[in-house]
Length: 286
Length: 317
Image (cartoon, rainbow over the protein chains, first blue to last red):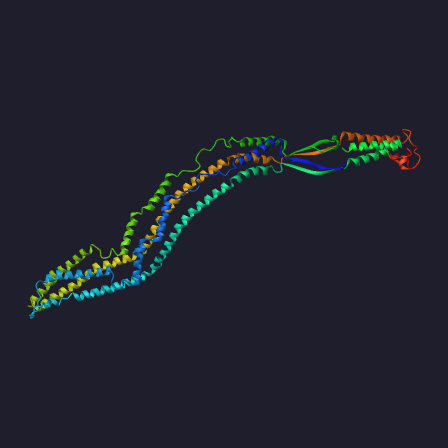
């Protein structure tokens, strides 16, 4: 027989008796929730991202076209005219508008003069003594030189005015130069807004994907939360213990018994006392 | 709780110590609270007195929908004032409005008519009268004077023609130039209209998105309802957990045989002390040896507890 080693366990419970059933109910339901939802198929199947309405797609298409092509007022009409003015193309008066105006001015006056004014003079304005009959008196009335003067005046005026416009056009150069930037920004804006929508869709799909992936984890966490709540609900403390060997007890008992037996009846009493002491030592060790 | 013992005679006993941190007057409330939480938490029971069945997402009112519709209409249908203005600007820039004044010819004709009339009714008669008075009627001088009078009329006609036609051209050239500046604003209008349409689209999408999000929130709320209910119980449990402790501790109790043996030992020792040697006719207690003489200490002997040879020994006597 030898000495004995073992453990002794002390348990501390912090769940009141009246709560025990409810605690088990809580933990079981948390577990069942997890088990019931332990599937990837359970996630939201509805639409979570609004599609682009027609107005948005049309607008983005329109903005892209506007950005690519610019506006006709600028591209087709304004800019070429401004370039002509700044280049001084109108200074010489060879543009169609000026020539038309000039012709009108001269032709109208000439026609009136020839058709209406001469008719009022009546007959031929002979120069007396002019045997040739070349109407020298009439020839002294000459409109051509006045027409040329008027023509020169108008060219000069036109040049002056076109120079004035050319100088004033300087302030428009910068604004027209910006139009390409505005068009480019418009095109970029259209692209950006489309990308925002597309990116939003990707984020949404990713969020749904993540939710699908972690769905089971969420329910596991419900279960885990219940478990965390009950951690510490019971504390077991196990400590080692040591118990001497029964032989030691027998020896101790035998010695004590022998001493007592000797006191009572030396000799035989010693032996009886030792035997009795050994037995009692063995029994008391239990 | 088992506790090992030799020979099966040792006892396995538990010591149970209960500590309750809840005052007696609160105990019923605590149990009521927990029970109520359990009832509400139970599957199938509703947390609320009634389920909420009404809408959680407001419909668009007529002003909002009409407003958006009008924005779309404005964005897609350019107002006439703008299209007309744009056409005018375009024509001005293109030079279409140069030399097309339909009133010019009439204006010129009226002014030329006055000049012709002046020549006919005032200038020429005056020359004829003057020439008659000087007996020069029909002379070369009269004819030259008439020709020069006509020439001055031609100069005036050119002035009138310039005022009517060239000034009109110049006015419209000024309009054409000013149109360059205005074209910038009108060109931006086409961009603004697309932006307006885009904004209207966003308004519509925003509302649609709100509805989708609301539906999703409702779905999540429904899905998580069991968790919400479960945590009602969980919170009640957490609230009361630790308010009460029960400590169960094993106690080692010696076996009854051992206790009897111990008692027997004690009795035998007592008897040995009282009667000493020779009780059963044993050996003489002569001699000072401890082993044989019974020298020892009797704990019950008080001041005379020391003995020698079985006789009490009084110290100092």
